[in-house]
Image (cartoon, rainbow, N blue to C red; front, side):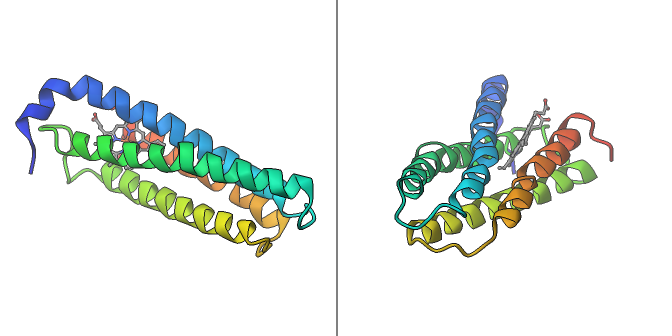
Length: 150
Ligand code: HEM
């Protein structure tokens, strides 16, 4: 299914898609880094309380709206005639990577709530490694959409 009228706005939709992607990625790179600092900070300390505020604002003001906008404009692009050929492997790989990115977003969101309850469910090392997940997925996505290797 495609919507003909979307072709008129194709460059604008793509620009808005990329603007949203940049905002989403900026937040996704930064939030696990805040968790790296939050994990060892003592419960009730000034630093822990400050990190709670930073994490909540980052998710609510940037990461969540940016993810919604990325999906919205991405779906508009999918619905634009001639943009997606469903037989292409690169598109399925991008879609899988984007779904994993959204799942990781959900994981970060759940972790924020447990940090807010002063729980430390995972180690500092875990968050250091998790910090690389959005980077790896972003590299895969960009190679898929630009190089289209298969
Ligand atoms: C959230 C769901 C997403 C959907 C449904 C989606 C869908 C699409 C579609 C259909 C296109 C148009 C391709 C074309 O014009 O030929 C596109 C372009 C693009 N997307 Fe996404 N996308 C999503 C998320 C992302 C993410 C997370 C990234 C980067 C981390 C990303 C990076 C790009 C880039 C760089 C382009 C431009 C490619 C070009 O110049 O043709 N997208 N996206």
